[in-house]
Image (tube, rainbow over all chains, first blue to last red; front, side, top):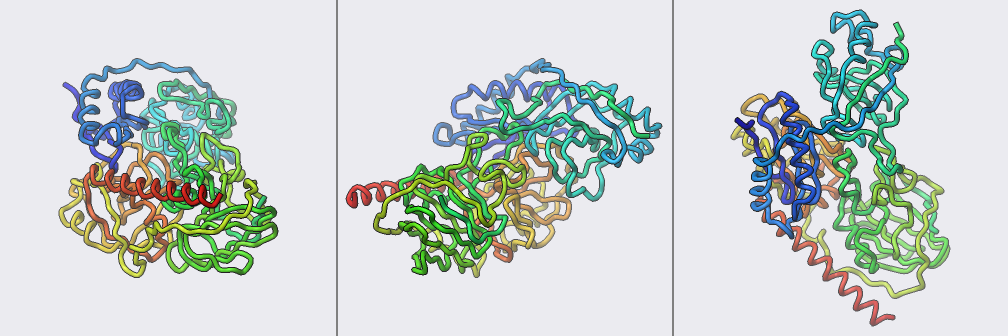
Amino acid sequence: MREPITISFSGGSALLLQSNSSRFDEQFQKRIWSLATDLQAAPGFTETVPGMNNILALFNPEEIVPEEARKQLTERWAKAQPLPRRGKTVEIPVVYGGQNGEDFKPWARHCGLAPLEAAQRHAAGTYQVAAIGAMPGFPYLSGLDPALAIARRSTPRLAVPVGSVIVGGAQAAVMPQTSPSGWHIIGRTNIALFDPHRDKPSTLAPGDIVRFTIEDVWL
Amino acid sequence: MIEVLTTGAANSVQDLGRNGRFDIGVSRSGAMDRLSLMIGNALLGNDLNAAGLEIAIFPFRLRFDQPARFAVTGAEGAVTLAGRPLPARWAASAAEGETLVIAPPDKGARVYITFAGGIDVEPVLGSRATDLKSGYGGLEGRGLKRGDRLNVTPKPYMRAFGAALDPFAALDFANPLPVRVVPAAEHSVFSADARKLFSRWAWRVTQEADRMGYRLEGPELKLERRLELMSHGILPGTVQVPPSGKPIIQLADANTCGGYPKIATIIEADLWIVGQAGPDSRFLFTEVTPDEANAALRKQRHEIDALARTVEVARSLAG
């Protein structure tokens, strides 16, 4: 039994294929990666944006008319097998708490954990990059220990500094640039996740494994 | 070289934007009114993607330190070169030392100044567009400031001429501006009332309107049922409806992913109208099919190509 999906147009030259479920599914994501790889070689398709259990597929309407593009996307999805992708492993050293992790203690308290224990559990996890997006190099990470989940702040901060290690809902991430965010800041890393002048501007890619290591904990 | 004498930080170097990097979170950026930038480039015989200046803060003044050829397109208002008025959508030659002054426009929000040969800045991720949010591209990844000097190709004097192609002729900014949309993923999840309101209300642009997006004022658009969406790719022109029920149009510098329900996507051929609509302008959305959206864009491209060919003929006759 395959998960139900919805395919819709985003304007005249893009299609959004999304899961009808609101729960992230890792197997579904592996099929999204597979579809993205397949579309890179598909005539008429120009660009793909894999998201969380969804994909935006851009096409050139001079090569492929919208209804044909929709038909092809549907057929290619039906054939997409989960791509068992395990990319490189990237270690991200974190200083938890202190001035650069101002939500660290309230977050630990919310989770019912002592601060050190919360840091250890965050660093014990194996995270996988599900998708890159929103801002340049921003990784959507799956694999956060459910005990460490916390609803997003009701009022987003206008400027969360680059390098902030953050949690929001059931997701973990690191800020690749200073930007507004409603996620909780639990620490800081010095790893640069994005540099437009590098050959590979984004440090992380979908499928990569991320491990956080404890550099220090401010208690 | 040209030197910026008077500017605001929202004025920036822009081309048609970055493509092919949405998958690593890179916004398209580029001109908010791509049509006017292309007309400006076509008038000069440039590649349509050549970088020019997008001016949204007025007055704007620059001085030519060398003879150059340039065009002013987009929003219409008083434009003078060394005190001499220039008509709208006009390509002209500037002598060394002459100053170009762009006054606040009467019609539209953004003026484009293009230069023969384009503005010479280093491309970043395949484009010369400034991404103001992420801080790269254009001139050091920032808006223009007084004293900035930009490299343009020196060009000998050539007689001035204008473009007959006038997209502004059909626009009346005192009335709601017609903007075509294709219904988007969650369109059918909005209540029947909300769907009706969406295409009948004259949505007003609020003060919160910049290169990232515009917040619109109007009635609250309600969903039939609660939706929890996971982050997904969005394009410039996406009309999202956050829990407040007030639509937001995502534009050139918007995030590449979002999580709010989407009611519609503004068609590429009409995005320039949004780019020319400042706060208090109003939009009237009309639904079209993807095929109609593409036909509209094709028509626009043909008009620009025709203009480029006419310019080529004019230049060969003059040369």
